[in-house]
Image (cartoon, rainbow, N blue to C red; front, side):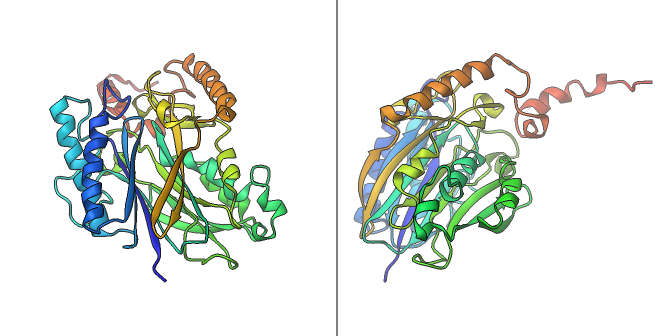
Length: 370
């Protein structure tokens, strides 16, 4: 049976008035490129959207992960959009395009990628989440809550299929290593890692033996680190994630419940501050106040024969109004710290921003204390 692949590939290739929002012309360019790719059989379906200043390409196909044709299609969309951004004089045109030429795979070239290959179920429900002004570790808490927290996901308690738990693949993005950990058995050890969200990030979640193929991910998060690719700060990673739901997996409502708490994430202004992650509809995925606060937008789809049905704008709902209000209150509280921690990131994280250039100017003025 042919498996379906969903590829979510995103990049900041230019925005209006600073780091606020993608210009509609860039989305139009991307739609044109992806529509041609669909006609040529490189992809089967697509949806183009944005979150803040990131252009988001959602594509379905049957070519598996890391497909040269699919990644090449995304690269062309970003290159053409970059040209348009430069013609319009947009800010940060081509910011995430860190290599000059496509070489068969888009990984390590700037854009973020989340991909999963899977066997379609009778009713295949998938949610795509996109964040702006934050880092991949921002997904650690909600993904943990979705697949391991019984106070969030009732199915872990009342659905026999949920009792076995799930396997979490965690990446050490500093040492470029990974480990797989089983929940609920290794929950405390897992938390010991993923609580350090700037280093250890959840990359994928897998099922255990049971009603789902154990080698097919149920969730995937983009984990590219632009600071490490470029050698200096060029913007936060603004991650994306794909999560499958329903039919023995966490329900869509349980997936969304994990985003009802606006937890603190790293990023915000100049990638140098902690702030609340605010769930918003696509129309409100515009980062303004202090270049934020950090946003998460979500789209829900069904998939049939690798074709998209939808989307539903998942956070465009009054049910998340209190979460947004709480996020704004937290934003006020954090902002009053100004340049002080914990609003500003600790020095260990600031090493990957422009702060070291400031400190270098002062290093010769330090004297030994007698």
